Image (tube, rainbow, N blue to C red; front, side, top):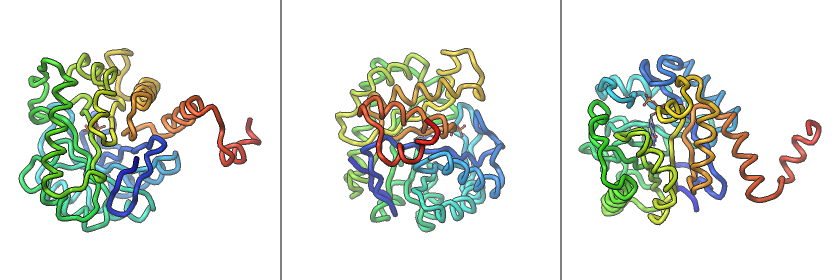
Length: 289
Ligand code: HH2
């Protein structure tokens, strides 16, 4: 399986790590940490050094109750960072729902549009369809971040997320976007209780029959706080465990803050799956073992 994006075809034979770069003053776990352009680009380089395969850059916080942002403000936050990030040699994704941001980002060479609203804002579908190859991640959410806590009501959450994603995929395939450009995401923490999130993890394999790469974002989220009793900044082990559990159930891409820890864990997980150590890794690390 692979994921076609604007400049890169991402091989998904092995699970990929998407490193999060929030250029926001108010994200739930790292708001304000990388708000300046120089800090954000330094953070991008640091994540690449830790082994990130993809950089996901976003200017709007989607935490429950977050304030909405104008397109102009969002453009001013993310464009300078995207302009630098596209020179770093890896696929770059923009985390946005705003069509004007999508158009400007794709014009800069950005590879993927990661939209928590699954291209439902007027003009978003057209912005991605106008590009011949750009990748897109379609995520499940009910309502809007401002209201979503009260929308966490489902009969069978896995069946409803499955049906929603199937419908979104159909809509964007009808607009001429090739399936090889599409990844899907169950939207952990978006209009979902801890029970809903955990049902989506334990039964995640049910989403695989859509035949598309699965991207998931468990990193530092509230359900991990409920499970461990730890605050957002102290959920590295919990986040790594959730990422591994997701990969073990077929996720192709994990969206994470703590790249180094996730990359190490995935190396061990893969070695356990394949029962071997590849030659390049052995040569690189032989002096340590
Ligand atoms: N989660 C967040 C933001 N974007 N995109 C996808 N595809 N999947 C996710 O699960 C996802 C996402 C929320 O996390 P974060 O970026 O850390 O926080 P904030 O929205 O407060 O910036």
